[in-house]
Image (tube, rainbow, N blue to C red):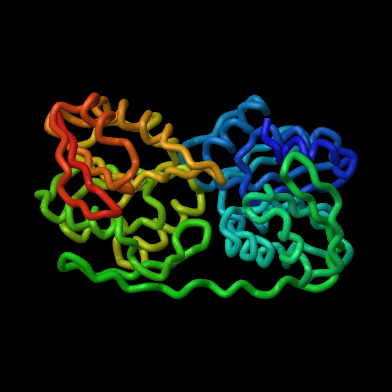
Length: 353
């Protein structure tokens, strides 16, 4: 049970007999319990693991596609980008926004809500203090007077009555990437990728992959906005599957491929390698954050399982911050591990059996 859920459970009476919409960074399936006494409740979730756990609590399951909705009685769970399901959300009189670790992502979420909000709709904003929760109330100020409603478990809950629309979100500009003889355009999104440039770690990974002979049956694991899959397809790699746990990432990756006239990359929702097949090449730039937590556990688990997801001649390329302790785990899982690119900040590992 997360501290954030404990804070909100203290305010459970606020949700009784309301038409509730829950959006934002939802990483705790226990939040579904807030819907128990509502008139109706609609959860929009970006994380496939959380969405599938909520679906299981409702006696259902999700397919491995990034835009889908399941319902049970008065509760609906949507695993999808918010902008894709706005039209499916009926009358709302209470909105709960869970603060994202990325401030711009929360600002975009609030802006997206404008078409749904009527005068005096109650908006609650909750977040961990370590992630900006103490000052998060300022994000609600454009819509009306903000009140601090509760403070507990190092989390803060703010509330406001909607009076005026939130400012229109300014979408980050499309960037052009030119590397290793390829050139393509990438749209950005604060939930996925909004650095305004190709980050150093991904750039090193692309240079390492460019030295690999093109092959078929490739996995872009944790694809984010789709840069790696687009790059590989541009080099002549085929049968590329891009996977991610984030609905917004998969939506953006597919959009970026289409914008670069690539329509033969496949997309799948997945928690790392779970329920995926075998590949001739796996490319991965694994995250080491879950919400506000820093953890290498998911990546270490992925490394241990990776050999099972490679063909006999298959190879995995992994880029990571230089200080992260992946070499020992890679050597335990694979017969051959080499560092093919490195500097003081990043290392690119090549692993095979």
